Length: 340
Image (tube, rainbow, N blue to C red; front, side, top):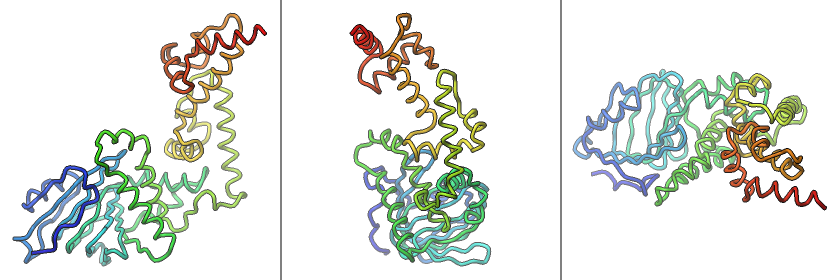
């Protein structure tokens, strides 16, 4: 018999137990291109695989324990495979390259390439990552104006990541912490986890791990980032000057020359929210100022329409949510002060 199963990454979630390797192979085939799979010779009678899953954003992370198995996964263009080990070991082979995954080399990454593996007793997590989004994330960390093509080589080959220096050790700790943060006994916290955008944290950490020359924004030289920052500031000024007109992401892409994904990430880095959320906040703030200095002919409905809110009801709801009072209350308060 093998060692006792270790605690899973998500112990508070429902655990699926497989003792039939063929049934497990059929389940894996729903998410992977499974070319071969089974228990290692000599371990057929002891076959055991325990799995828990957690969804965050577009990531579906599976935490599992397995006794010795082998398998071959086929190509999946555009989809990267990530395996992050907590305990045990796995040997990989791809394109004649042999790679060992263990607690000192804990992260395996394959950019959609075929690979074969032989696992000993193993405990860890596995998930797929969108390679296009990963490239956009790397470019967003580098700064506006940096093309994701700069990182295409770093994201094009299979490897294991070793914890050989303090930077990688820290990034691996962040990734491990982000994954374990997803587990909690209260299932109704799932919506809060979506708001926290842990999937973005995982993507950013993966980009930093896989692109060794990628610097964080605070480390860039002013001369490198000045032009890009100027473009972004000009975009913000354009938005502020056009709050009274409808603005969508396509317009922002055309004005800046940057991809939608890059804009999403840069706005989150700068303001903690996406561009559309930031624009709505700016509209609300401008409307608040106008309510305080309203003309006699102004009404809540006319100010809501002036800043492109779809209806006075939507405007009132959003305004109350942000400022804790209704726009009609603020309008009356503004007019009262104008009398003095």
